[in-house]
Amino acid sequence: MDFSFTEEQSMLRDTVASYLADHYGFEARRAGIASEAGWRPEVWKAFAEDLGILGAAFSEDLGGLGGGAVDTLVLMEEFGKALVVEPYLGTVVIGGGFLEHGKPAGAAELIGKIISGEITLAFAWAEPQGRYNLRDLKTTARKDGSGYVLNGHKAVVIGAPWASHLIVTARTGGGQRDPEGVCVFLVEAGARGIVTRDYPTVDGHRASEVYFENVSLPGEALIGPEGAALPLIEQVVDEAIAATCAEACGVLRKLHEGTLEYARQRKQFGAPIASFQVLQHRMVDMFIQVEQAVSMTYMAHIKLDEPAAERAKAVSAAKVQIGRACRFVGQNAIQLHGGMGMTDEMAIGHYFKRATMIEGQFGSVDHHLRRYEALSFDGK
Image 1 (cartoon, helix red, strand yellow):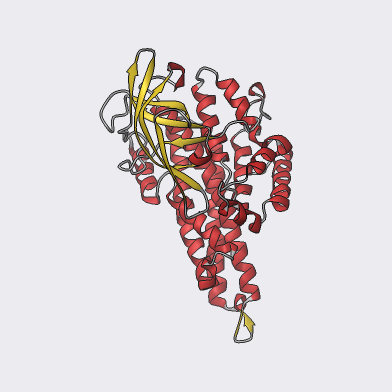
Image 2: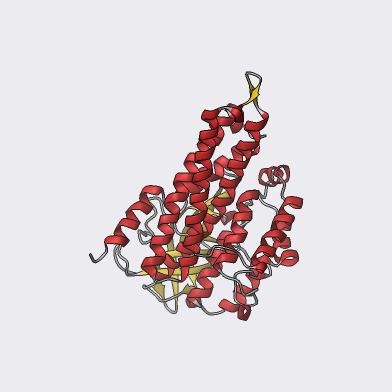
């Protein structure tokens, strides 16, 4: 199978890599995440206006550049290499995915605002009891005339402190874990009745605990079919997992490259530690894990347009390999650097923290192994 990129995709990669090298160095990132805001809105503006990459994956009919999942892969891998914290995943991949696939009222206008950088979105799906289960929901949306009243609690909503809108999953019917009765809503982050508790995450991002207390929503806030949105949610989350895997590939490459560079410089017994055979074997094992992760991620992106079961199997398989690689490569990178690898002043520790977070994002290795097994033997 051909995994080569088109000329346009290669140019996109080079353009983004060049911008990030000039404007998103390690020290600039450290200053950004340490600031009160926790991100740099001027970078987001540059993504929209100078680079035009917020529209790369959207169709030309929606004002985008006519790319697709592979364009997202290219961007996310470069974001991983630079440890970008700006909310591309939540806004473009997840928010744009729900608007493009769900086609709610005003979707084209909202996608236009995503492309122009006017709005940012965060995905409020996880609940304290949920354990990665997309349909395990206590948050409810009660019908009220032509609209809804939203109540519940969403945990660890990544990017919520920066979001103008939230994508919220809730129940209009059924039991807590039933596939029926699941809905998705687009909610303005400043709506009356929303209470948030914001905090930084270990990898430099920002997140919130979000509480909905009798939040009134108009009928047009509904995305997709009422009570039957679970397939839509699964599709968008699979796309988000694939994009996160692409980001992880960038992180893993930097972990491996940084460890190689350090091993060539660090000397013991008068020789670089890179010359020690046992450490050479260790770094080869790291390289193999990275390459396997990259291959599985590319395959997952190619299969995003396949039927739901095949798409989900490919995505879960990729996430399993990514999770294993993040742990193996990350831990070995820190071990070969020694204790200094975990200091805030060294980039390798920041890559390790991001790899550790990605390992559990949208499901752990065990979760996706169980999901793959269930999909493989369903109906057999």
